[in-house]
Amino acid sequence: MKFYRTKTDIWNHFDKALIHSVIAPFGFSMPYNNWKFDSEARIITQPDQEYVTKTLQYNCKVKTIPRVHAKLAVGLYGVLFGSFNFTNSKQKELVAYSEKPEDIEDALNEFERWWENARQ
Image 1 (tube, one colour):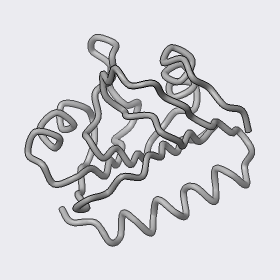
Image 2 (image 1 turned 120 degrees about the vertical axis):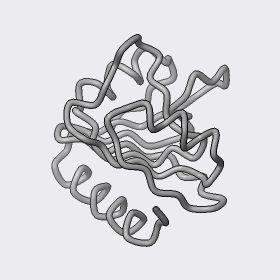
Image 3 (image 1 turned 60 degrees about the horizontal axis):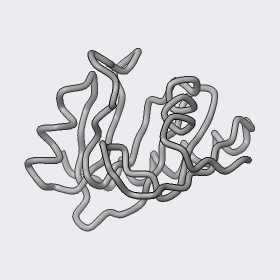
Image 4 (image 1 turned 90 degrees about the horizontal axis):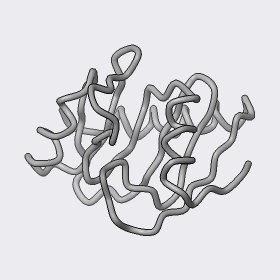
């Protein structure tokens, strides 16, 4: 596991990992033009219409959980977690990234638990 602070590094790892499952409390917006998930992704966000609408612009299914604040992105080849907002935030960020299969599996299991309890 390594830590990253620069947004460019974080988004590059996001893309490299082929992310498919995301917990993004404030919705999701990729800073690159015309970017879409390779296959339909699943995203959990807070039930604010602005966050849901912004997120639905991508190739994804959206579920909501009130007051969710966790940030997690699980992919085929990596997992990111930390303070990173998956939007065009001006905040200082810190994300841990791992390509270890056991970390990816643990993160996916955690995401599945949240997904099953979220609302459509």
